[in-house]
Structure formats: structure tokens, C-alpha cells
Length: 540
Image (cartoon, helix red, strand yellow):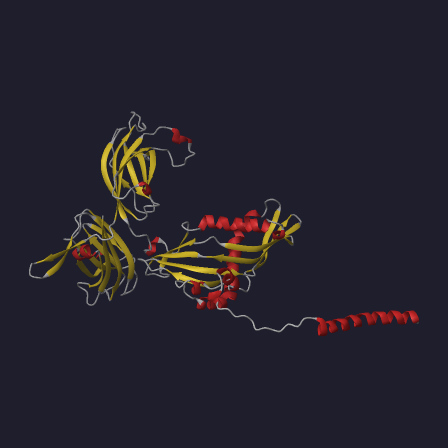
């Protein structure tokens, strides 16, 4: 009993003694310190490093006055995110499924499927949006996007009798894209193309597990993979590189606008191939500008000639001189069978200097494939002269005239050179036929006739179609004739098939002097009908 009591007394007394000694130390020996009020310093007294450490994430709409605060967008996305998450994940499943199916049956793979797919409960947030001044039919915005998602994506792959799983989780993205909507058009969704490029290198971070093990925990691998992905994305989309997403097709009228005229002079060809039995050829040249659906233009045919001379001129409307190319294809004309190909060549328009003529002596090739062995064969040469004339921003000069008595008048000097007339037939109002109303518009100018599409059963058709006319001189003395016609659908008697709903003749002198007009005109021979026409004159 004595031994047990001693051990018990030691076990209880020792902790109790230590506690009493600590309290005595605090009461009599420990130095006393008075609580002091915290030091409050204004932000202007802090250095930049301290300020950055104290407030590391100031919204851009606070730091940069040209960024707009868009809390309403974040609130909208937050409320919609549960539905957006499901919709985006369903789209991912449907888009990725064909890719998965391509690998099934290869390398012993029996199946590939998503075990789990969610983008998490946290939506991306916009820290601010910068909107640039709207240019002509173009809108440019720069949102700043931050997304710290808790995404969880599991892909299961069954190989033979084993199942391998890969998991992507905790996806963090920070990027600043520039989004350009152009051109703006009067049909929903009101822009034809979406151009996206990154203004800064993106920051991407994520976790990745393979067979349940954290692959990113391997020393050095996490940083290497993160930098590699950011670098690859930046190489593809870092400004000025961009991705173009077409929204509307060309039928909607949302095509690029003309910026100039390309003058092509096909001069001659030398040492062409002998394609006929008598050792001659009957060459002619087809010309086409890339990006256009218009028919190719042709030179005349030079019969039995291996060194033909044409000296023929052609003109093309240019919409993008940086990317468009002139395609030249030479053929040997045949009367009964298909025309034989003599050779081809292309000329990128970016090689041209505006307003300067440039002579090209081109080696004809079998194809534009650099690895084609047939290109080593000599097929002759083609000589052409190209001139690119961009449209001038201000095609008219203003002259101030005085009569000597203090009266001043302003006169616009009509440019003597030619140019391009753009006629956009927007819509018509209150047109009505006696037998039917399926209206379309017909545009007549200098012997050319162009038509819009037919809109069925309406008195207020909307066409939004644009037509182009190239002229050698300013059409100051010309008129353009626009007629609205109704056409019965199906088989009908010819004299009752079409019906005029009214017409208008528009003098072009105001278009040339002002550069552009946008007016509504009353239709002649129509009770209340009107047509809305926009015209633009561009001179070179």
C-alpha cells in the first residue's frame, strides 16, 4: 500500500506543482505589458509593396477608370450557373463522344466514358469590362475573367480487364480576352463574326489524378505542366493572333466590306507546253480572287500559240488585302473534250504596295503542293501586272468660293476617277399587289440587273441585301432604277406571274458628292409604298 500511495501522490502532485509554479511566475516574476492601441496609418503613407500585400485583389473597375463594373452580369451568371453547368456538361459529352469512339477497339481499349462530369458550384466572374469606342459596324470589348472552379471530371478507360481512371479537379483560370463583334448587321444576333484573342498570357492551374494518385504532387511536374499549357494557349491565341468564330453565313448579308479595287493586266505567256497533236496549244487564263463565290474571269483564247500575248485588263473587288490571293490558272482550250490544264500560280495581295503597279513573271506549276514532283517540270511562264487601289476615306475635296461681295458658297469637287458604288436595299413598306404580294426588289444600273430574294406574303418586306457596281468614272449624271416586284409562286400564266408594286429613280449626284446617303423613297405607281435604300460611293 505504501508503494501504491507513493506513486499516486507523485502522479498527482507533480502536475499540480508545475501548475502552481507557473501561476506564481506569471503573478510575481513575468514582466507586465500594457495593451496598446493599434497603430492606424492611412493608405497614402504605405509604400507600394506593403499596399500590394495588404490589398492584393483590387477590382479593375477601381484601379482603371476605363473598366466598367459589371456586378449585374455576375449576379445573372450566378443564378443561372446550375442550369448552365448541366447544359455545358451535356454539350461536352455529346461533342467528346465521337472522339472517344474513335479509340474504342484500338490498343486494347474496350470503352471510354465519363464517370463524373461537373464544372462545380462556383461560376466564372467578371472583374470588369472595357468597351472601346464603336467603329463602323464593329464592337470591341475586353472582359477580365477569373474562375476558381471546383470542377470534377473523371474519365474511365477500360483496357482489357483493367479499368483506368483519370480525374481533373480544381480548375483555376485567369485570362483577359479581347472580343470583337464584326460586322454589325441588322439581323439577329446582330453580328456576323466573333473574333477572340488573349491580351495577356493566361494563368491556368488544376489538379490531376491518375489511378487515384496525385500526379501533380511529383516535384517540378506541376509547374512544368502549368507553364507548358499556358504557353501553348498563348501561342495560339495571344494577340495579334486570334480565333474567328463565324456566326452568320454569307447569305445573311454579313460579309466583309470592300476596301479597294485590284487591277490585273494579263500581258503574255512564254514557252507553254505542247498539248495538241500538231505541237501547239490554244491557251487562255482563268482569274479568281480567293474568298469570293463569283465566277472566274477569263481571257480570250489564243489559237495555236505557245507564246501568246493578251494585254487584257480585269478588275476585282478586294475585301481583305492581307489574306486574299489572286489565283491564275491556264488551260488549253478543246472543242469536244475537257480543257487540259497547262499550269497555275497564285499571287498574295499582301505583296502589293497601294497605288503602285508591280510586274510579276510567274513560273507555272502543276499544283500548289510544294511536295508535288510534277512541279519540277518546266511549264512556261506567265507575265501579269497588278495594281491595288484602296478606296480613299474622303473621296471629295471641298472648295470654298466667294463672289467678292461677302457671299461664300461651298462646292464639292467631283473626283474624276472611278470607284465602287454600293447599293443596299434595306426594306420596303406598305407595298401591295392586286393578285399577290410576294415582293422582291430589282436594281438596274448601266445595263446591269440585280435582284433580291423573294419574301412571301408580306407588305413590309425586309431584304438587307447589298449590290456592287464598279465604274470607270463618277456617276454624277446617272440614275439608278429600283423596282419592287411581286412574283406568284408556282406555275401560273406568264402574264399574271409578275406584278410591279412601284418603282423609283434616284439621282446619284448626291451620293457622289456626299459619299453616302441613307433615305426612304416613295414608290411611283404605288399608293403608300416606300423603299429604304442606302448607297455608298467609294473612289480610288
